[in-house]
Image (cartoon, rainbow, N blue to C red; front, side):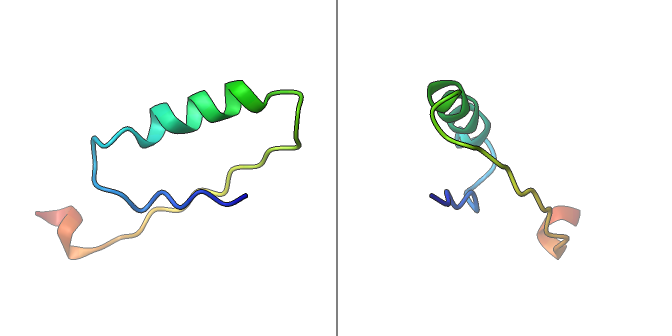
Length: 44
């Protein structure tokens, strides 16, 4: 089940991921694919 995480900074993405991983531990195989987009917004 993919969980898109393209949400604003400070919106609770890491907390959601940590809680989800904790709740599903031992229930399902889990993988996290991480990537950082380099944009002009980052420079601002």
